Amino acid sequence: MGTAIVNLDLLIPEKKVLILDGKEINYSVITSGIALKFIEMKDRLIDLADDVKKDDNKAKDSFNTSAEICALVTSAQYEEMTKEWLLEHTVLLQLKKLIELITEGIMASLESFNSDGATSKEEESINDAEIKKKEEK
Image (cartoon, rainbow, N blue to C red):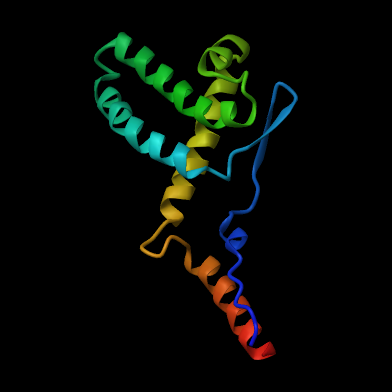
């Protein structure tokens, strides 16, 4: 009797990398912990976004919260790339693009998650691998 193998590595999305300060940052693989922290912070960001046009302090808070979200990803890969580091070592255009790319990665990660925890393409790959394994028996 053979061994059934389910390769969960097939669930990892295609690698997307940005370069900041000469370092490669993978923004396509968002860990479960980062995704959960993002969900916790998302409500705060939404509340701030509603008030940004009315209050400059809210705009500043929104920007800081966005930098904090980015730091979840950057500091997981490079310990020194904290929110404070990002605010002190990037120009506004860099930080704006970083926020866009990391938000894109987080949203793609959350959107790909369905009741089974995988996109249909990823499920298909795993199912195909399982079928091939059974056919080999």
